[in-house]
Amino acid sequence: MDYHDVLAAFGVGSAHPGGFTGTTFWMDRLQLSVGSQVLEVGSGTGRTACALSERFGVKVIGVDIRQEMVDKARKRAQMMSLDPDFILLDRSDILPFPDQSFDLVVAESVTVFNQIEALVSEYYRVLRRPGHVIDTEMAATSSLPPEVLLEVKELYGAMTVPTLKEWKSIYMAAGFEPVQSIVSGPAREVDLQSEEHDGMAIVSPQAFSKEASAIVDHHFNFMSDKGKWFQYGVFQAVK
Image (cartoon, rainbow, N blue to C red; front, side, top):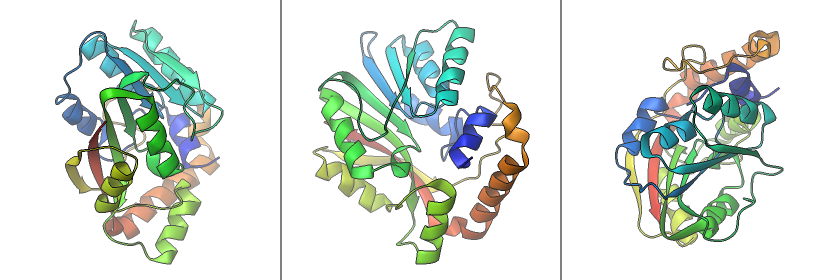
């Protein structure tokens, strides 16, 4: 079990920095027509995908590499009488869709935990022109000390954590222009059990195991001790 397995066990729908309040912030800025095609990468338990479907009446496809996340996302959509599709991926760095399939790609605290440049290139490939990405990501305040980066790798599986400036450079190198950070701020801790009053969260028994508790404690202790090294940004990148 790792940190992301714990999120799946708790049925967390918005563990990303800024939480669901942050999701609502960027969603308020969207202008989507009913016929828009939306892809959420790392859709987790489907909270954002279902919110997009409900609010804009658009077709949403969510992809994730964890079966438990996909199962809970499908259950959430069923409970809300919505029709997003949720697909289990074999690997995280290749999106199984043709070129120019979507008008919007959404990622919330997902890209940083994968092969960043490869996945951003995939965002560009599957987007139509014009199309854009909304990506909420953890960012370093400055270059991380080796011991902090090592703990990030061990706890979260992230091989590197770009600064806000570096995130923009990665998107521009993939061909996006313009790229802007529409909001940024300090990384916040996530209360996995309250999860901003997510009434649709489905909690599995594994969430209360000793292993899960140890991982949760490690996460909160890490953010308490090392949180000064981290912030977040919500990036909007245009193709």
